[in-house]
Image (cartoon, rainbow, N blue to C red; front, side, top):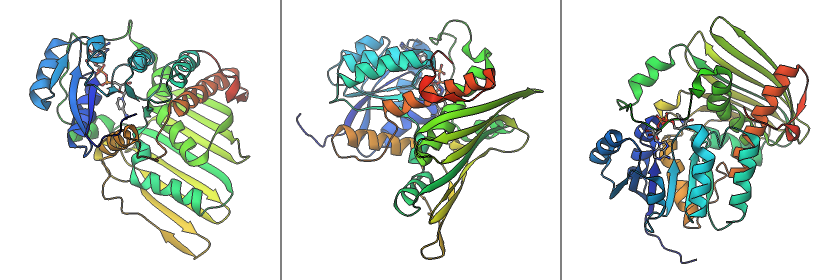
Amino acid sequence: MKQTSDPVRIGVLGCGMISQAAHFESCQKAKNARLYAICDAADDLRTRMTQVWDPEVAYRQYDEMLGDPKVEAVIIGIADQFHVSAAIEAIKAGKHVLVEKPLGVSVEECADLLKVKRAAPELVVRVGCMKRFDPGIAFARRFIEQEMGTRLALKAWYCDSTSRYTETGNLQPLILKSANAKRPEGNPKANRQSYYLLGHGSHLIDTARFLGGEIARVNANFVQKYDAHCWFVAIEFEDGSVGHLDLTLAVRMGWHEGFQVYGEFGTVVGKIFNPWYLRSAEVECFSLRDGQFKRPLGEDAHFFRLQVESFADAIRGKDDFPAASAEDGFAAIQTLRAIQLSASKKEPVAVADATGAI
Ligand SMILES: NC(=O)c1ccc[n+]([C@@H]2O[C@H](COP(=O)([O-])OP(=O)(O)OC[C@H]3O[C@@H](n4cnc5c(N)ncnc54)[C@H](O)[C@@H]3O)[C@@H](O)[C@H]2O)c1
């Protein structure tokens, strides 16, 4: 393949919340990419976003954007139920793909996507687990790999907050909505359990796997009281270490997300912030070797922009950051489905055995 250092020309599918709050700006700010095209079925949104973000072209139809030979890569920022079909279309059109999390909504459709992706090894296909680009979390991962020795245990929690919409509303730009937006049939968000597992659980599982490795088995408890949902999950990692995950929506306090990892030569403790602050996680890594804590500053924590820059570098063949691959996206969906099955059957479930839709 011809190598070039030109900025990667990206087409963003979807002009909804995530593109308005993250992807358009990230493509325009990235040092090695540009917002070449945008696409949305809703004319009002697309027209307004074209005025604000100034892409070279705007498409109403996704297949027309995919047919544009100048589009090298797509970012897919549409409803979860549409991710797999949109990603498969893009791969078949020869485009690199960064698809928002979760990869899909069922184990089977994600497996189909993996098959299509494996038939096109020259393409970069990633999932938008942008927390991996949080410099604090990335630092923790390097410490665990390079200094912590054998892993013993991991705890991770993702607890949405009763003040979340106040904070998020203050931090994000004003989000333009459209009555003409293309949405899945029915209202998938009405099933709160599925919506929380897919939308929020996907972040928790990715952080746990990023820092703790492959999850082999889960034993989940689920409780719903007042308007809150809580999953407490005992997990076993493939390397024999143990863990505990807490997915709670919503805790009666501010955003509460973090992790602890215990190893042979060190311990890692991390506090993660509401992502819209673009603030690095506060991470402390204690090393038994020198008796000291290490704590990164993480001054550049625009993880959505860093995610685009890493994607563009990977497309140009010069990136080795452990971003979330399609395989990671598949594993997250299978783990979430295993948690759902385990909670309903009230018994442990091997992740590899989980099938079906969340
Ligand atoms: N990474 C994160 O932390 C994070 C945060 C929020 C949302 N998300 C994810 O982003 C995704 C999108 O969420 P959103 O709230 O922006 O969605 P949204 O429904 O607000 O916007 C999607 C837009 O895409 C358009 N669209 C859908 N299918 C299309 C098609 N085939 N052709 C043309 N236009 C099409 C719709 O018209 C709509 O305007 C979801 O998967 C969500 O989970 C991720």
